[in-house]
Structures are given as structure tokens and as C-alpha cells.
Image (cartoon, rainbow, N blue to C red; front, side, top):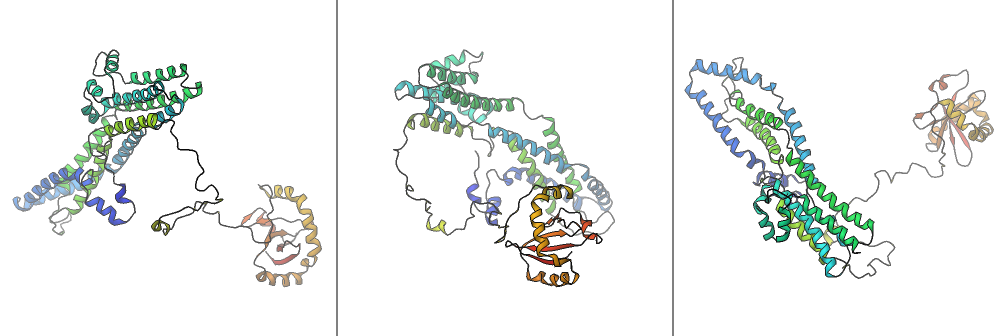
Length: 483
């Protein structure tokens, strides 16, 4: 069965994860690697006992040379690369199978909406369309899931469970040479035929409504076909074989190469540790990593974390029949809601949850104001070069240029420039632009830190200097220090 642990980790508090890690057994890492780890440690300590107590000094030196030889070559196996790639592929396959596992809600909702009729005939159409769709899922799950196969070993068991009628079972057997393995497409064909009959009888009011129901049945059947195809064509056996063989051979060699010896390859004495702590952690990590792939390579198996096929069948038939029957054409009375007269509803919380902070639903920079008070925003096309900017702004800047001429004639005076440069600290705000003073008195702009003018312009002293001016909304222009 699938182990749901979300309630145990509703917060990221480390104690919750530690409790989940160390105090749960089903579907846990410890259950997956416990038996193999126990056997590996037993063999490891047997070899260690022989090395320590059964060999003479010469044999110990020979054994140590073998240990050092194997240890130096353990890195030849690309364990991390192969396992990472393998587990990623297996997980993507598992995810695709889950996305196609088949939930019947849409068939039920569209059938209840578009197959009308309050009489017994309309009710029969709705219930049988949904039941046939679910029978198609059962037929498929019986072929790919051992859990479902144990529940429905024969078609007679499907009849006994109420999903099929006896005459429907006989008709199913006519489509297959083996009566026990009726084709799963047949119930879907029945469901589609019922939609056609309902349209002819007027229970479905338009061809479009019929198409909507047909598309939902077709999508559900396509999902079932994907499951069958993935089961029919499993992951190529050679790749899992290579990975499983490599991991097990790695730790088989590690029984020798990871032995704790009295001295290293240079003859220096080492700390005598009887238990292989780091080697045990390595075994748990890599073998647990391998168990992840072993668990999800066939999600329709019988492991703790495999898909619950029987629970899904029960859920689909129960909810589906409720949608098309009990909940059919039974909405609540149309009334005014509680916020009818409120322009902005006052939403309530429990006393406990009202005290909890929450982030408003808004953009991360929506509260930032980039326009200072009293300043205008001037829009212009994006300039790709200085000449293009000058061409685009020539017309719009003539008025501003003339205003600068009238109000800042004394800027060209060297003494005025020195006096005006002292006022820069007194005007930290305002819309600042860079003006290049030339014979034609033509402004070239730099907006913020994005220089659209040629940087060499400021160095051409023979044609004029570059000044920063503060242009206020009232039209007054205050010269500031030259660049």
C-alpha cells in the first residue's frame, strides 16, 4: 500500500524529519537495506576476524597489499554517474505511469451534464456509460497489477463484485479466444455506443455535447492504453542489469578493499577501529539509492509504495456513480450569497489562524515607485546608436534646447561653472541628464547608468564640455558640475 507521510512533515522542522527517518518502518530506507546490510556486515567482520587472529605476520602483510591494491582501483567504477542517470530515467517513467493511471471524474461530470433525462432511461444511460468505462479500467488493471489480479482472478469474480452482468460477461468472452482475458477495449466501445444512442433519443441535446462526452471517454481509454504499452514494453533489461551488478560487485569488492588494517601502504600505523563506520554509511546510501529504482521500476507491483489499484477502482466506481446519479441535476437553490451587499468581503479566519502571518498575492516589485514626486516620465523609442537617438529626439528637444539657451547662457562662463558646481550637493534629487555643449549646442543624453552617448564626447574639449543640469518641472534649469 502507498505510505502517505505528508501530515508528518507539514512543517520543515528538523525533528519531524528525524522522527520520520528513524521511527518509521514501512516503505523506509531501513526496511529496504536492513537485510542486505546485516549480511554484508556479517561477512565483513568474518574477514576482519580472520585477518586479525588467523593470519601470521607475513600473511597479514600480503593481505594488506591486496587491500591497498583494490582500494586504489575502486574509483574505476563510475557508480554515481550510472546510478544517477538510471534513477532519473526510472522516475520519469514512474511519473508518466502515474499521470495516466486513470481518474474517472471527468467522464462522470460530463456525462451528468450532457446526458439529460430525469426518467429511468436517462439514469440507465448515465450509470452504464460510467460503469462500462470503469470495467475497461478493471480489465486493464487485471493484466498489469498483481494486486488487482488477486482481487479479480476471473471474469466471474468481476460479475460477482457487481461490475459486470452475466450476459455482458458472455459477450466479452466472444471477443477473445481466452475467456479469462477479454479485451479491455470492448467496454469502452459499449460506452461510446451508448453515447450515440443517447444522442439519437434526444438525451444528448447537440452533437457538440456528444463530442465532449466522447472525448472524455477517449482520453480515459488512451490513458489505459499507455499503461498497457508501458507494461508490454518494459525498461530494457540490460541497463538495470548493469547497474544492479555494478552496485553489488562494488560492495563485494569492498569487503576486502575497505578492511581496516593495522598500517597503511607506507607502513605507518593506523588507528585500530573494529567497526567500519564510514563503510556502513556508504553501503546505506548507495544500496538505498538502488532500492529507490527497484521500488519504482514497477509501480503496479506489491511493494509498500506501489500504486493502489484496488483503492482507485473503488474510488472511481463510488464517486462516478454518485456524480451521474445522486448528484445529477440537483444543485442547491439559487440564492444571494453572504457577501451580496459587500463591495469588499470581510473574510473570516479562526482565532488561531488569524494571528498567523501571510504574504499578500502581489508582485515582488509592485510596491517600488521609480518616479519621484513632481517629475514627469518622458517616453521615447529605444536608441541603438548615438546618431539614431539624436535623429529621434531632434524635433522633441528643440524646445528644451532653446529653453536651456535662454536660462543657462552664463554656464559657458568659466567662473559661473565653478560657482554652479558647488550647488550639486544642494540638489540631490531631480531629473538629471547629460548635455554635451558643442557649437550647435546640441544635447546628447545619458539616462541613468545606460550611456547612449559616445563616451569620447566628454573628452572632446575642443568642441565643448559635458555638463550635468537639473531640469525641474517649472522650467528652471540649474547647472551642476561639469563631467
